[in-house]
Length: 145
Image (tube, rainbow, N blue to C red; front, side):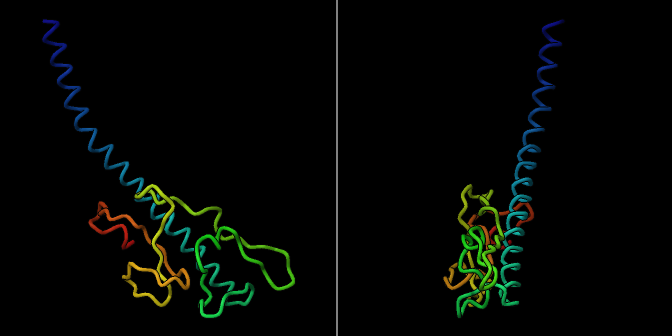
């Protein structure tokens, strides 16, 4: 009788644990997607703050850049605020790691690129996107976020 009870208990535990594994995988994927949303929002906000200061003529920008940063590294290193001021303004602490690809490489679009372009014109950074080829849980591509 005891051996039979042990086998039944193990079977019940096996069924319950096999139901929990897909739920755990789904939770991990949702957490990565939330991190991706957060990272993209942080970088886009930093680009917008840079653009606002450039439009107010508080920072120097290159001619033809339309007031957008030349790369993400500029947002991390910071730019000189004003002509005679030694104060630097930084927009990002570091370039975030893409949770889907596992590295800090992002796709860029410049102001002159098409909205759905996957190649970067190289003049400025107007938008960032993930280089992941995966599909999100809602059915959209990560590179379209």
